Length: 107
Image (cartoon, rainbow, N blue to C red; front, side, top):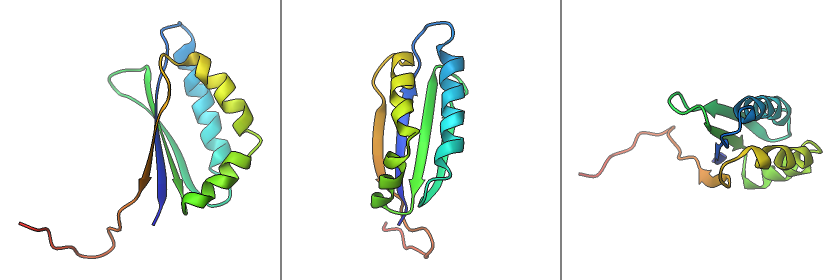
């Protein structure tokens, strides 16, 4: 099944942090989508709180992260992004559930 990371980021309150973070996330998505075994690399901004962002990284399997971490762009990401944040990134790891088959929901 697909291995997925979700990362929640919250920009600090400096005037240009949202614009800078948004641009870096869009740039990162355009780079990381091309990594081997990456299904997609999505970036989103909360509709009610412009300081809140989410990244969803979808990989063929857990070991696929290797290609992502070996990408030279990776070394530019944290040094640029971390100073723009109000708090540490909240990273969560997931295995997507198989929805291709019928299921009987227990009562």
